Length: 502
Image (cartoon, rainbow, N blue to C red; front, side, top):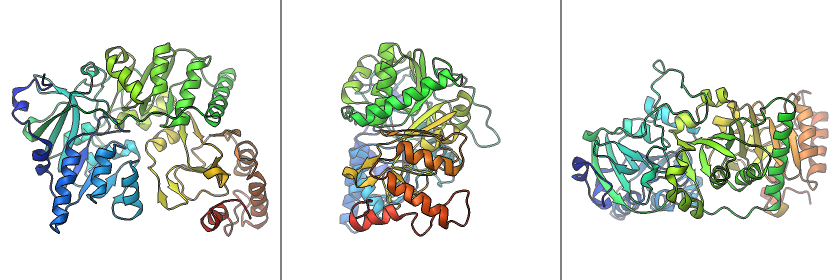
């Protein structure tokens, strides 16, 4: 049975190939999609075929592709493979897309997720030509039930000259009621966002869509890109245990209530290990104000440990996605999906006292963190929402194994090769070696604690040697650096394949 209850929307139903003709060379296109959830499944592939045909004729055809965050191979991968993307923002993780960015074929602007929608609304990115948005269903009244992510969809629907909708029958109809669509305005017209607890709802359950701008409706029945999490390794378990011990001590010291404060967790295996640890730990009646709902949060809802989670999207394994689809009505009593300008909003994060926990590529001895670039130049995925939460969190944590590449790379270095999060915003660093609480410490005090607690023993003497050398050579004693050797670890790796000294 069709998910389109409105006669006028049914009159716009067509194939993805026909709909792709509404997108032209040079268009700026806002796509739905966030961490592999709720992205359009049919239109991108049809558009990629159209772009390839144009290139085969010797014609120029590229678009600017804006999303909520990462999508999937049949979206980012398909468009990148035909060199169809001139500009990408705000976050990506597809290997083909990443390679095109690092080869200079596609430009990329790594925007804070909470900034991306408001910047499009304000016109910083020019006029938005097309919005391509996946929805679960269209009601008789012409409103749309959002699907498994919200991201920047509300902004793209608001600003685009032409709207293409994909109605995906794979998404559970019981998602209806899980969403809370609340949009900001331009500076000068905004009011305080009235969220005082993670589960508070302040908006609509639906997208209100301007029918006059809808040019095409596509019917699909394709699942989200759901990637299994790796089995928990010992390093991930150890890092999770360190964080749980830290949180328990914060409660003991009276700096946090016994049911903790709202938790934010980045995407990945370590983040999911933390959630597993919380589910098995002593804390009860927990809440989350975060970006994505991961497997661990679904498990915590099932166990009763997690009362409510606010996010903008799912990032689930196939097994957890099936559970979500089969029991969406139940989970809708515990989950709120919002636009990312709200889920990642600094005002709300600060007000609620969120405790953030995000992954990193490397940290330096003074607490600066690189979460985006390999060896300073090669983009990995992007900053995502880690900056939104880190700068505004009550307590901000970063986690990583201390080693990579079979021990040839240290995650703790003298100076990060790219700065994403400065020492002013990073409060706690955790590796499987231990935890460094950096609050209230000077740069030199932080350096000693990070080296002693977080660096791997194979690299600890080299870092201690660097700090001693920097203290002797620096032109100031506050944050000592030997600029000639500050990136010595990285130079050695690029020259020899290892950060270790020969």
